[in-house]
Length: 306
Image (cartoon, rainbow, N blue to C red; front, top):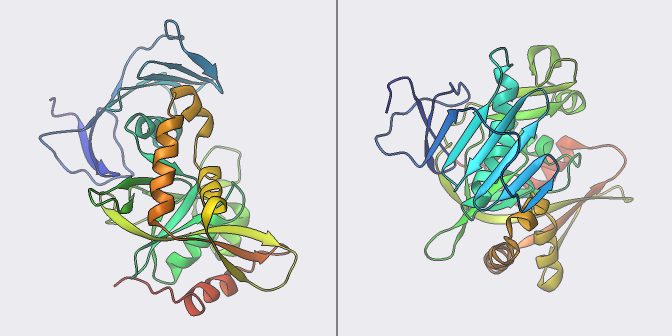
């Protein structure tokens, strides 16, 4: 391969890219799993199986068109091609590359994607599952300030070891924060880089050395606001537990378009068998962040890893 390629490792894979990726530390590899390259791409796939949400789906291919930004073609779980103009803002190009394009790549590779943040504890990896805007990333970031390493922001990539153990594949290099979340974390938003020009959404780089490791999953907590003023944990079993795991599967619309419903059911069943799940209730009025972290540490005996 040409010497101009940028090599990095993340999510348990080795990447070679002709686009610089400053979010990651460069690590040369003689054998790569995924290639990222710039290419001239068509506007449409021939005979797509389904078209939805700006994505076109065909056999082992997903074409994603982001208007006025770029077009991404993800193929066979091992290649991402990107078509973008010469004057493109590379931060935005990489944002979609590390977001929707990377999610499609891992779906093609048979990985379970869960809509959750994650932290590393001495007991194992703990996930906070919730819908967008529920505070899962803010909670994980607050835990990180207490010494817990943050492993996932918005989406957790989950695989299974040969013994069936569920494990999270780390790969997060930055955290996305709203202005409200930054204030809750006592971070001055003026010290952060904006995600997009004119928007109050920011990027906080993470200095993690865990970008290419897998961690056993100890517990999943579903975040739930309620009318009471105290915190409460309810351990969930049976069909309700399975339904919660399935509900928080990320990119469900793409799973249907890719014909991966049976695979999703298989992986959710494995996760259901291997990992305990509890519903974590917090007061709906006001996100009491520090008391919630105190509750996790003191009442649930979460201990940061050394």
